[in-house]
Amino acid sequence: MTAAGGTLDRWRSEKTAAFLSTAVAAAEPDPAKAALFKDMAAAAEEQAGILAQDLGHTPDFAPSLRSRLIASCIAAFGPRAMRPILSATKVRGVSVYSGKTEAPAGHPWPKTVEDVGGRHRTFGGGMLRAGVFGVNDGLVSNTCLVMGVAGAAAEPNIIVLTGVAGLLAGAFSMAAGEFISMLSQREMFEHQISQEREELERYPKEEAEELALIYAARGIPLDEARDVASHLIANPEKALDTLAREELGLNPDDLGSPIGAAGSSFVAFAVGASLPLIPFLLGTANGVAIAAAISGAALFVVGALLSLFSGKNAWLSGLRMLAIGAAAAAATYGIGSLFNVSTS
Image (tube, one colour):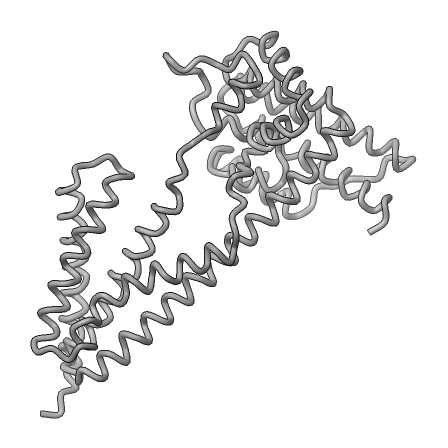
């Protein structure tokens, strides 16, 4: 792509951001947030004007069909529901929809650059949570599959074949889905952050003002917001990190490995899906009863682990998961029994 082509693309991106920011402002019932997005639209128009000077002329602009569709969805569903899409289209300020708009008691607004950085340090429990849910998906889906086939009075080798096929199909499906999801997210993040880096280098004062307006919309006095933003912009790396989070609602720490995410999803699903197959693989008698017992115990443990993320009582969470899984397995077993294929 030529330099002129890249500048034209950035100009269109800024014009689109201005168009969508105006749509957000029109749909936003909160006056402070509506004012923020009006200011963001004006800032995007200003940056588009700078890029037009580089082009030597102001091109014609009409919102694309995609942009008009997004604007219609903003009006229909509200800006908060559209936050992920707005982030992908470089609408600045969407981080105001990620939490409370006012500083809670005991958690004051940042007064220094160090305060801004510290506010983003969080416990990395995402992988643990994804692993638990992956095991749960494999456990529930393959237990239901195995019980459905067992209900049809199929031979143990047929149950094993079906269960292994279900394990592999589910694990590969989970891995492929996670790979595409993570890859798409990573590409979007890298593209947006790259654009933000260029803008930070080109017009740091405008970026500082945008950041200050976002903090002001959240409740911090504008003068203090501008002071924090101006000091922040002086540190390019910290400024880029914060601009990505606050302007675009992106988290640079989420740039994980698509291959790693796919591998972990595959393993987690496979572990859960293998549990109901254990008695059939070992050739034990009463395989259905033992598989049900193993799966039931595993469902309780998974439910108890999920209480770590919900804050609920571990026993109640475990029993609830056991009841849901047991009901699903009983239903598939009953349906399978309607298709009795026993040759005896």
